[in-house]
Image (cartoon, rainbow, N blue to C red; front, side, top):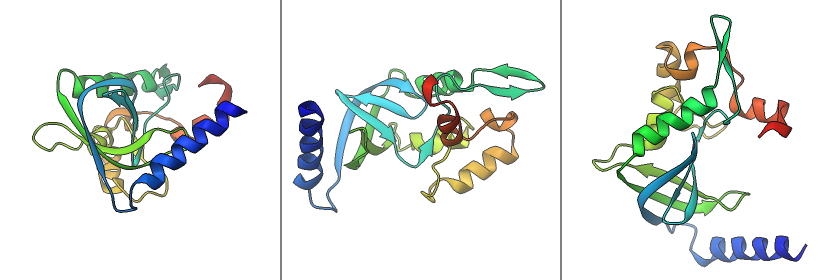
Length: 162
């Protein structure tokens, strides 16, 4: 119980240490956890506005299952490998991860690229990246070339697996 209170206090301290308009930037090499979570300079970052399949999530194409969550992670690794990533954030999620939009050198938006390439969907209700998602869906990119549960639906159905 004490650990939970300390974590909550720390999260509130960070959240209220900056005005609502304050935005911080973290730059460095990224370590990829899954298709929408990375660590940069010791900070765990959730790519805001997108939702990638979970690592154990399977998709089905032509009657065959494949690990779409694992391939989403691979796509993100390939995108950021060996490059400096710059992430702008202004709040934390309920797991104390920074919610950020991240870019590669030259200004390529990583969050958008994951949706455009079909390895993530636009996060429910965020309103961001919905046009990019529609283009990926129409072109059968990534997971849109399969039958799949939206990641939030998969998490609800398979809570014990992730």
